[in-house]
Image (cartoon, rainbow, N blue to C red; front, side):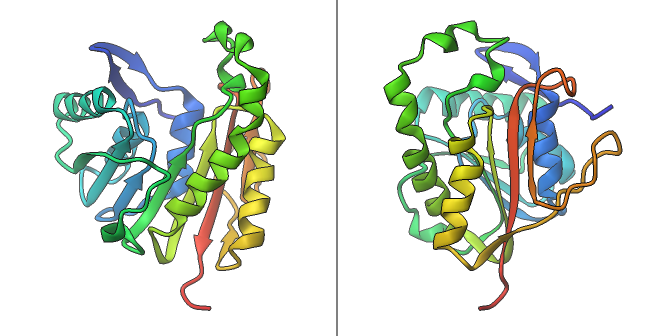
Length: 223
């Protein structure tokens, strides 16, 4: 079984879904790395990253909402992770201090959320027109976060949906514009087939996970 991570939300204890934990495993974060978790709240992937790194290095956990920053900070304190720094940061806005400074960037972007509809059935009532605009936002976030990746570093893109235009569609549009990045095969637990594409769609019922999409990309060390 894939190890599950624990986090805190609104002061309550919960267990992170296996799919979200798997995305962090696919990042293969080395100890001592500098990591950016772009859309981090409530902090599950940052906490899983800290576990993977044995609380070494530095994890910049970001969110655009002040009250969610408090969730990340309090969760890190409760879990004893002093490697996590929380930041109020809009994922679409550039932070010049971070350009090409990150060994790993995790971009778990806002999405339609259809992969977790079993947990949040109200998702079915979302505005379809608003959902159609998501790929444009997702690509904007991915391009901005890519600018923080060091040459030779890793960019991990993920969503909790199974909509092609939000997943493979965004990745393909990004790679077309950014030849300095390319996908890399995912190293997965033995229960999964061998992966060569660098992309994985997890379908509920096929594995005991939420619906989820993961893509691992590496920035070329030099052009």
